[in-house]
Length: 313
Ligand code: UDP
Ligand code: MG
Image (tube, rainbow, N blue to C red; front, side, top):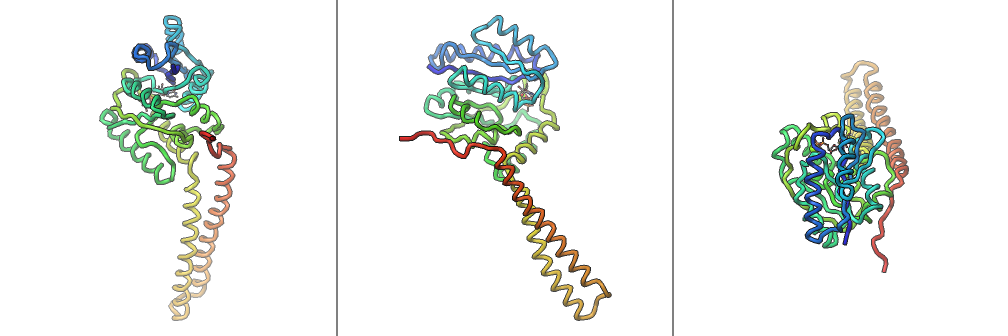
């Protein structure tokens, strides 16, 4: 029987911790009773340097339910993506399969069973995907969807409307642990792992209590990180613009010479115009070219695994 670890990153979640613990313990008990996961499956709360009583509450839960509730205390606040990674890498050595979920129960815990079923059908990663975003504000919804579109344009593979509610088999987490990069954007990294994947769909609810720990500033930072960690397309864009300007410079040159020979120009204009266009284009082209090398260096220093062999027969 597979041992399940539910990983829950928590930052200042004192209002929801007990509610989350109760709900998730309920899910675990149900899964154990149905014989879908091992009896010693557990919840792993990761305290991400909370300033409130979150850690005390985790300790309390652990004392009351020592078998079901475990905790990891990070020494300081490192942000959701790192906290989740810390949780996953800790859980990997204690379990056969992990599910990551936010503490605020916005993600529907009732699809966890479906995730486990899909895992038993042979999927290594099961993505939780939001059906609609009815409960999000108009602003959050449009910015988030714009972000997914932008990621797509930049050639970054992500699962549309999937946040970090996700099942991962032990071997998937093991492969993930080979990605040593520090600029984490988990949603972009998961599709690189490979293996068979599936999706489950759910309606995203309101936060049970407390308020969002992802203000606009953190959201923008995550978005920029997502693009800059996976795509060197912005550099190619510069190169493209440089080439276009050089092409336009040729047209400008023709125009300048025609004007010159038809005598409609003041002295010095022709040479000035030609210099501006050609030098401008040349500079952009050079920056773009240097950028291509920097882009390659960037990809090299990440030292990502180049492939993941699933089987040899
Ligand atoms: N979180 C965290 N560290 C942070 C910020 C958030 O561990 O610095 C956790 C938070 O406790 C929650 C999850 O990340 O479990 C998602 O945060 P939140 O629900 O506030 O984001 P939203 O759903 O509003 O995007
Ligand atoms: Mg939330």
